[in-house]
Length: 273
Picture (tube, rainbow, N blue to C red):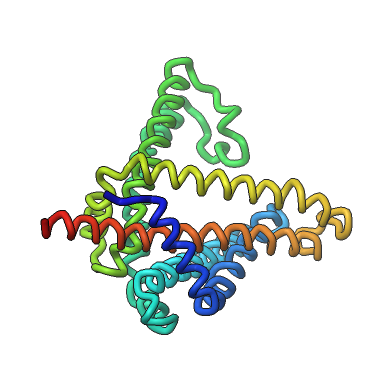
């Protein structure tokens, strides 16, 4: 039986004991990409999508590498940062491929919604920027879109919980399709426990993010106007937002690695008995 309290204790112990090894990864592979992404997001129309999209994608990829490096270090703290960095570099392609497979599957499942919009004569290009709220759909079409969207959201949440061990599996065992199947198998029987922890993480993250944007952001705006997307005030808020995202990513990555170790150890002991 996996005790989530014990997993959390091991996670916090790891983060405390390995702070020096984690710091460069957190700063260069998480904080900076998250801050840049937040700054580009706040810029809005001030930056061209041709420029903003590649920057955002690059930030996501770097942050993904950083997350894998944290997972690798949490799985093998004695190996040190150098071995974790090497593992993250070597496993990055597989982790990216697995993530893309999951994304493509969810995107394909979302196609019926676009099909309803197209059949109803809705301009799909107008769905960006709030166009969805103005879409002129019949009652039956609107009901289908609403129900299907809710079902797809629930499916996405279930997939997130069942694949919470995906990166630890890839780092520790390898594979792509096999890693997806292995992650889903390992999380079986722990769905509600993982969901509870995941919801707690998300709630804390959303509260912290809201405090930065609505609370601290207002104070920063009084000292340095936020009207300029790349002004001092906007940069400070982006850095603070990046710090919140970095803390969230660090905790989730370390927790998933420690949960993987706990689950595999529990199953090994059951098999031995």
